[in-house]
Length: 246
Image 1: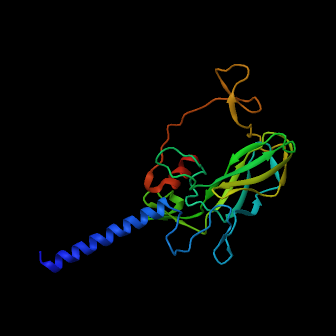
Image 2 (image 1 turned 45 degrees about the vertical axis):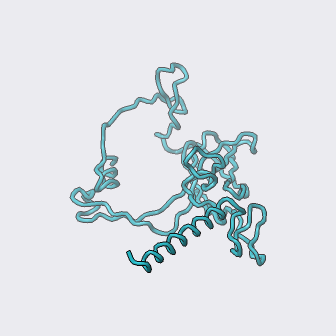
Image 3 (image 1 turned 45 degrees about the horizontal axis):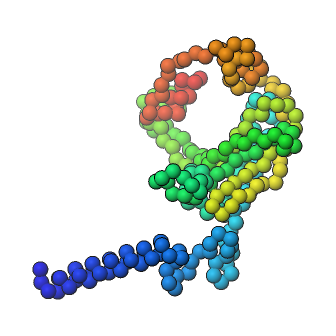
């Protein structure tokens, strides 16, 4: 190796070492490099130059119905903006297990009450992505038996919470979101629970109250479980589910 080549290698090595030292100072120091424009700490609430950060908000709450049958589905769809979470699929956890970064997620829950918030039921929300489905190489009418399923996301993800009430009357609900910046709650909404018109809707499955060796539904109807031993084919997965469940 010539003298010029050795000088070039030494220069690159020194430059890399200087970069590593600068990054170490950044991570162990006050969170920014000298002369760098930095984000505010929690509670500061604005950038240099008085440019305000967006705060955590719950917006555009839409209910699929205002009257729901007993044990049937109420679905709330809504948007969350201004979150500092970098991974919306992680719950917010300031003290996670080793190997999991702290505070990178967001926890979103639906709060439901049948008695003006004396009793509160918490139902976790989830991030929902709509998809377009196509069958490649066959037809949906043939359940895509000789083809492959194709899925493509449509639109932006939205948040949802689904809840099946087990008591008649007027219910109240709120949405709550928590991330590293704090927690917010939505305004209160209401819905009415009436008797279900579906004769096959017996509620949830529980241990039978008369004999713990058996199961029953919420209304006391016996539950007799039957295993179908059915599987679903991977290349046409949802079409296979449709065919098996028809």
